[in-house]
Every structure is written in C-alpha cells, then in structure tokens.
Image 1 (tube, rainbow, N blue to C red):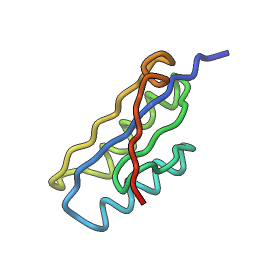
Image 2 (cartoon, rainbow, N blue to C red):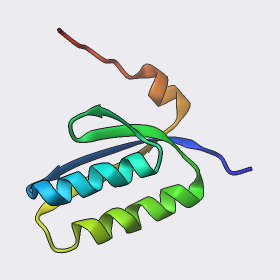
Image 3 (tube, rainbow, N blue to C red):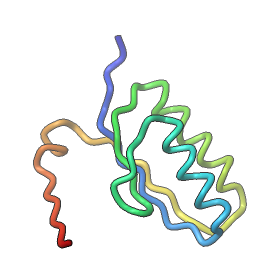
Length: 85
C-alpha cells in the first residue's frame, strides 16, 4: 500500500477561469478547501506525482504561482489555526 502524505496546495492566480479550474482539480483529487486559494488532504505517491502535472497543464502560460507542500503528520498536528467569526 502506498503511503499517503498530508498535502497543502496554495495558489495565487490572476485569471478567474484558471483559478476556478485549479480549485476544481484540487477537489477532484479529494482535497478540501480550507481558504479561498488553499486546499489540504492526503495524497498517495501516484496522486502527488499526477497533481503537479495536471495543475501545470491548467496554469499553462497564465500568470500565477502554485505551491504543493507535502507535510509529515507531526508538522500537520503542530499547525495552528486562528479564526474569528
């Protein structure tokens, strides 16, 4: 069985159309939206290899930046989330 790693995907993309397509791809990979342009979830090795290719194809030559950050469980558990309603 392939090890799943917690993964964060964060992006800053100018085009509404491209930004929407990136968010839909993240959802297709089973990631959950935690902020407008931030997703998280567990991905196995195959999906961690496939996701950058798919997002790169979506971004193509459009202006933007996408960060895909795997995290170990210890780092994930040490994350702090501060919210105000």
